[in-house]
Image (cartoon, rainbow, N blue to C red; front, side):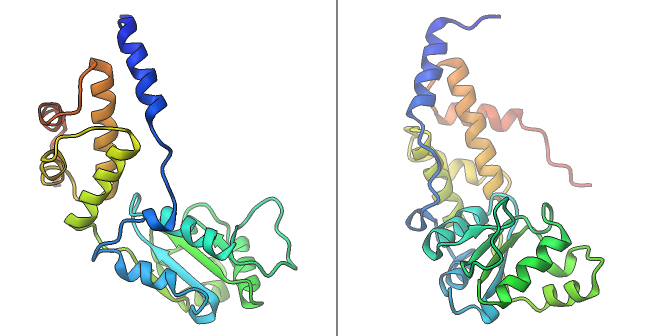
Length: 226
């Protein structure tokens, strides 16, 4: 069924008003759950051996924090199509547990040993990675590791308010506390819920409200506790 033209225009306007997510250092939301990670990343260039592994689940802020560091340090993404072995610039290697070959890991560590510096991000710690090369496995286990802990209320509230701002959502003041008490306690869950709420509001031509949030919560499947 074709939606009314007014809904289509409202959707286009809503999308046009949205702001791209900011990865600036000043816009990173700090709470007790990530303060140690922020301090560790901010300690650059005084990392042991010039290397640091930043671990956290999906949506925990790894990419934001790593991107903010890269901008500060003048770091280049690694691997890329134009990696210069002679360059001593710092390197950012993201998703090392999922998207990076052992050869690239080994090469990055060797470059960092030569003074380039290296920040690695991952969802899991290096000792959980599958490595065929014994020397690489031992070197990864020796890296300094910092973990973003499970999200606390301060972080979840900050994230949901930031998402509202980026989507130009004028939410009632009691909506954010109401939502975070009733969904999975993770940044990823907050991101998914805000996106779903915004899409539903756009589809129905309504404002974001507690009523809309309640409908989404009631329609959500029960968590699998098995």
